Length: 384
Ligand code: PMP
Ligand code: GLN
Image: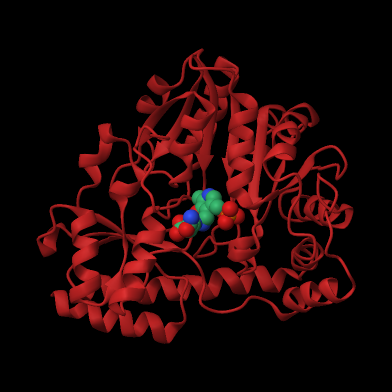
């Protein structure tokens, strides 16, 4: 077993995607867009391949992408990032997370605090690193952590507080009091803050994402992770990055160089182009997805689910309790066949200790074409 949660093969995403393919269900399970992203980005990758950008890129990432990441951090967040010292390009956020955990964990006495439910790779990577995972539950319906529970979870053994904000699978955006408490606890117990900000540009209703690294009292102990997948609809390219203080970045480089060494040569210049797109692109991205979220939320409510309205991300969590569900995973398998819509059970993202709290909750992805969401909503009415 790789993971305290028990790492399944295949992952829940692969299982539900395969089930959707087999049953003809609309796949609102795995979070990937069903439309291509910006033409400029796609064209730049094609050109890079034609120009012969097909061999190993530098291990830290091509200089122009590192520069574009630094420009992006300055433009959106006013965070100063030196492209040579403070940036590492990775094989998606997934590799950045794995390399950061493997780099920072010394042994079994170290603890990693995570908010649960969590993205499925967290528990597996914490287990691979040899550390102990300490889960802080996010509770229905607003999924903000209880600050006392957070305080109890952090102690001098805490090596890392791992913060996914905006949060998958719940769609929550953490309140500023939560950020305050995370930073206070990290400073008090000398922990590193690792943030997963892959949904940074997917915050709705005029909200803005605030990285923890913008806080003066956090910057020197924070590693910030993001990825191009969600921002440019290129989840299959696996271009991610991590920014932070040089000594922490160097520790992550030391691991990354033996995981993949380097990755995605022709995609790196293309993502540099994406990161330099005008503000209008990023605004439009959030507005379009926000409208799709509304469509999905309405469809789920009409079908009889109770819904937690997400503030960001691809995802909406719905309670199938009112429809008679008692086991989210069984219910997901059942509705793929009966209603023809695939979702993901939140129980796939929890430790056994807190699993019961999520027993009837399902995650639906809104990052699909409008007509697909309309058809999915109409199929879901079969449940009501
Ligand atoms: N973190 C979170 C919260 C995610 O939702 C995902 C993927 N959807 C990842 C990390 C992985 O990102 P990537 O595909 O860039 O590896
Ligand atoms: N991050 C995507 C999601 O949460 C899927 C990633 C995967 O399939 N591993 O749906």
